[in-house]
Length: 456
Image (cartoon, rainbow, N blue to C red; front, side, top):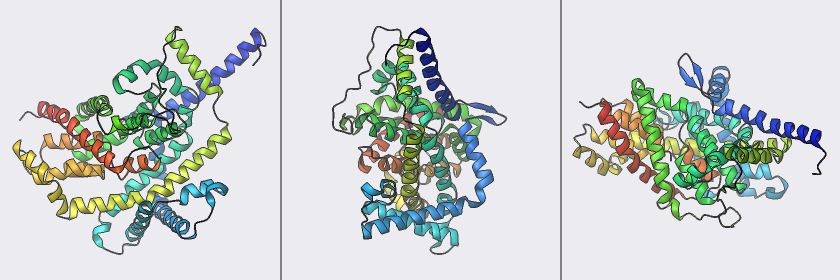
């Protein structure tokens, strides 16, 4: 653009500054700024979730069942008829297209949802700790998160907030976590707001060429911690609510410790460090001679100036919402229910977790056979360690199991499914390997703190 004089420069500068500040501040207020309430701290996003549950709760279960059924029917239709929607109707194609495994999970999830709603079929699939909790709680919580994640998260990602904050912390993030600085906003959103939001942002940034495959997997598998409000739920259900501050700080320290170690170990370290188009990594955060804050502001203003139009962002958000909602609802219900059945209503859990039970007995842990599944089955569902913790008497083990619910991160009924669905270059086997590594790393941190808090 040609120089039009000082007055023009000032006007353009003011417009660019507002284009950066207004959306970014709005995004910070919605997702990241803690608000003091009578019962503790929360974020505006959490208040929105409470409002939806309060005022729309009477239709949410029916909506979840309907979404699961529609997702399954669309996938079956697309698989049998094979309509040419990829180019003519890309949004419909994204909703309906499903690989055989995903198709099977959609169908199974829809069937379980119908069984729970109409109270028919095998009772074990529609108990309080199996199908009911998945359809009436977890599925609803996931859906409520998706709308602001898809439509409002661009306030943080598209108008310079990520660029400003990323430039500010780039050197530290690169040295400590082997990540570009812009991942700091992604990580913060995951920590404070909701894990699903962080993964969706990570997938979007990977597809747009801001993260390499290794960087995207690192962010998704190390910073997608459950939200602060949900952490309080975990603490209360597990019976460690009276020690929430100590427990949460310990869990955060354990997660940061993992985030510094896991990216340096296989399988994450062996994931290709190249962008989605195959080009090699160029994510070296430069440190030119300009003052740091000036570089932060320049990068933020440049990003804001090049932000997509409102129409383009709305189309992209709608595409992402429909793809995730109809593509994940059935698999979420299917995997969660079947995992809960195995964990709580079959001998399989005891057999699989027998080595962990044996190791717990070496530390004189009582009821080791009951506690052991909480260490392993968290891979399938984050509720498993919490439910196990709520049923035991040991303060130490409740503290540790509640911490695992927060720190293991890879839950196939939620974060794992989303990681696979957004197209990050990682397999289910690699996710399980990361889960095991995280469990091994965080358990000593949690156990040491538990022994200090509960010495007797």
